[in-house]
Structures are given as structure tokens and as C-alpha cells.
Length: 363
Image 1 (cartoon, rainbow, N blue to C red):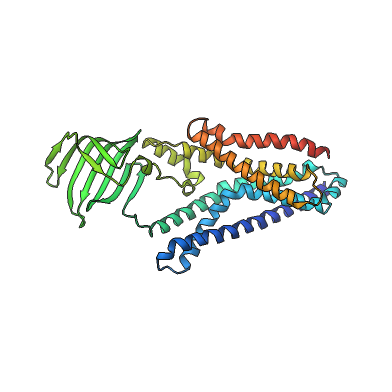
Image 2 (cartoon, rainbow, N blue to C red; image 1 turned 180 degrees about the vertical axis):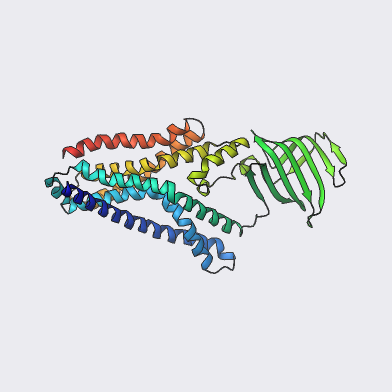
């Protein structure tokens, strides 16, 4: 019992060291690549190097989080290859520990890491990403155009044709804003008029107002039920639906609440529901990566040729990445139920790994 505990403790510590080293390498690569992107963005602003570095530090944790399944895959191959090349696997077998037991320890640790990432680190990362987007967005040229979704409806602020416009709608149905009010102000923010309408077709930038009336600053109706009433906006249906394009700004604990709020406003929540399922499946995804790396290294013998393992890692990462994206796209377009589209790649990896583990355990 004591010997088994010592060996398991040793395997766990060595695997965590590999995870840390691999994560550090990915962090440094992500930092360098994103830093160049931020420097290019701020080249026309007099901000110095402090701002690009600061924004990169805010953004890279999110990048590392999204790439962590592949960090675990590479770490698993690195770890198993290490103990295989140093003949530690043989020593462990002599001690009565099978290949399957060697894989299980890193697998359990990966699963636990997945739970910690989703429940504890994800809320912190979402705050960092939100701060990153707020700071970077303040430097963009189109900040006079803003939109948001709240419990009180959909709100849009934009500047157009020399007027400052504030728009409120109760909800979105298909391609129409329902219960819409458009308040128009001059450049000095003096009220000019407002437009009240039952709905507005926003399939293009030229909104078609239906059942609308124009009310001047004195409260007098100057136009009513005008079939030619239109409104030129900077937002159409596609742009308005991109309000929550970066779902990394919403933490795991807040995502369900946001889904309910968005559904009440008439928006499609397929992407948000898929993101929630991805959070739930994250620990299992990490576990599947470890099982797959164990099959690649302990189940296949390429002697001293490390390039074979490098090739396997690259090919596997690319195939898994595109398979996950393709499956998620099927769910978001309602070709598959959201739950199936997210969990299907993981289940397939488990099945493939399970077959391979039977072979590994016999060796």
C-alpha cells in the first residue's frame, strides 16, 4: 500500500511538472504572438509599450485556457515518452503497476485540473477578457456606436447624420425589433424628436419602420402610420446579433443567467448553450486527451524516433481541433442537438482510446 502510494505520488508530481512546463511554453508563445498583434494595433496611438504588454497579459490566460486540451495532449505524450525512454515503465511493472495504472494517475489529475479551471479560474479569466475588450474598445474609432442587452430590453446608441440617437426595443423576433423607440438629439444633446413604432425590420442597415409615428420635442405627432418611414442605422441584424460574439467574457457561473436574458430578448442562444456544454465537458475533454496520449506512446513503439511522436501530436491536434469545431457548428445550426454536438467528439475519443488501452494494458 505504502509503495503504491509513493509511486503514484511520484507519477503525479512528475506529470504536474510536465504540465507546468508545457503551459509555460504555450504562455510564452501566446504572449509573443499576441504582443506583436497589439503593437500593430497601437502603432497609430501614443501609448508606448506599456499598453500592448498590459493588454497581452490580460488576454493570454484566455488563449491558454482555450488551448489547454492540446496542452494536456502534448504534456501526456511528453510525460509518457519520458518514463518510457528512461525505462521507468519497466521498473513500475516490476513493482506491480500496469500500464493502465500509469495512465490513470495523470488522467485523474487532468480531470481535477479541468474542474478547477472551469469552477475557479474561468471566472477570473472572464473578468480579464472583459477588461481587455473594454480597454481596447476605448481606442477603436467606432465607440460612438454601442449596443447592449439588459433585462429592460435592447439598447443601441449611435451617431448618424449629425444626430445622436438612442434606441430601445423590447425584444428581437426573427429579423424585427419589437416595441421600438428612437430618441434623437443634436450634437449638443438637445432633444429633437422621437419615433415610436410597433416594429422595425432590421435585415439591412436601412430599417423599415412599421406602425410608426414621429413625435416632436413639444409632444406633437408630426407623422403617423407613414408606410415610407425608414431609419438609417449602423446596425443590421447580423451586427446586432454579434453583441455576445466573445463568450469568453461570460463566466461559467453567469452563463445560464445570460442565456435566460438573451432568450427573453428574442436572440438565438445556440452558441451560448454550446459554450455551457463545453464548460461542463471540459474535465472529460482533458481526461480523453490523456488517454489518447497514453495510447500513442505506451501502446505504440517507435523506439528512439521522437519525430514520429511529434508528427502524431501535430496531426492529432489538428484533426481534433477541426472535428470539435465542425461538430459544434452542426449544433449551432440546429443540425444536431447542442448536447450531442459538444459531447460527440469526446465520446468518440474515449471509444478510440478505450480500444487502444486494452492493447496497452496487455503489453
